Amino acid sequence: MEMRTMPTIGEKVSRLGMGLMRLPTADGKIDYNTAEAMIDRLMEAGVTYYDTAFMYHGGESEIFASKALLSRHPRDSFTIATKMPLGEAEKAGAQPFFDAQQKKLGADTIDFYLMHGINGGSIDHMARIGADEVARKMKRDGRIRYHGFSYHGATDDLPKVLDAFPWDFCQIQLNYYDWYAGEAQKLYEAVTSRNVPLVVMEPVHGGGLARCHPDIIKVFTDANPEASAASWAMRWCGSLPGVDVVLSGMSDMSQVEDNIRHFSPLAQLTDAEQSVVERAMDAFKKLPLVPCTECNYCAKCPKEIPIPRIFGGQNDVVRFGSSWFLMNYRNWTKPENQIPACIECGTCEAACPQGINIIERLKGIEESL
Ligand code: SF4
Ligand code: SF4
Image (cartoon, rainbow, N blue to C red; front, side):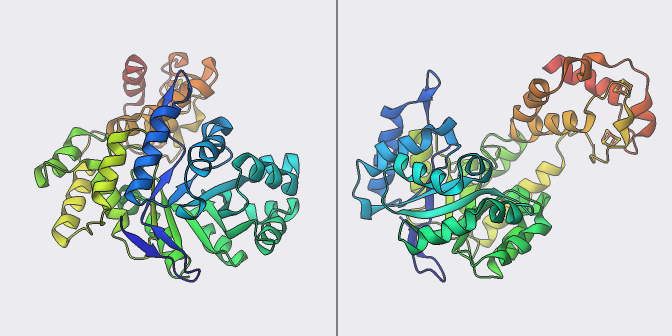
């Protein structure tokens, strides 16, 4: 397993990390037999970084980490990361929340402790509930070793968060799709220009870069029939200078083996392989997407149908084979604001600068749903 010593804190970590948020399940519960076998295989292969959180698997992930990892493997053979969600900590009080979390995990010391889901407004929130003070005290008392945060905020707010505290490390979402089509490069540069140890989450875009459109898969299989699309995404992240750990939320043993194979040692992307990733991005651009720019000019819909959100969800189905956002719209939108409520008044189409035939597109999406 490829190992690395993190800058500034000097902690030796495996480049591949296991995220405990998408564990295999059976009957709606974590499938301990399969998941423990995965942990054992990762440990055997030398993976030392394990990342859980209070919120994962409805609170069951930390219990799993305690039983499958902390109770079954020597404590000095791995590091454990978990996170404090500010909303939950506010309800319980930051110190009692931490005490309960540490007890649940069964760890005298939590190696990497993160403030969870931080954004630009979280600095004030942390100060208000005393989360930053508690974390610093826990570090002084040896109950945590490193204090960091996972970032889910606006790109422009990250420098402010990074400069607010002397963080030991941080975790950001990074993958080749968000780098070329989004703002991930700016996030990365904000972190690496400050030499803050960096853990990467969502390197496969929540699985979307593994099950993406066949045109993208073809680019990768033409280049190397033996390598999975996921392995290209994982290696792309691991090849970036300044990325210390690439987390993968592995859900089955085949993903475990695939990741171990590509990180033992990590095969850095060559220039020719980097061109393959760029060709995949070219193929993404040619996909038959709804050309919605989310300008929201169609917001005057008398039925308040969330048109850009629906089109965004539809585009994710095409790009990433992911219906999560589309189904989410269904689950969280009142029936009177869903597509069947459309009265075909044409207000949206008259306002749309992209000239999208919104009514027909919506009808097609409703049929597919
Ligand atoms: S045509 Fe349908 S979606 Fe468009 S504004 Fe009218 S009601 Fe809303
Ligand atoms: S007006 Fe057109 S481009 Fe703008 S959000 Fe609505 S559908 Fe998308």
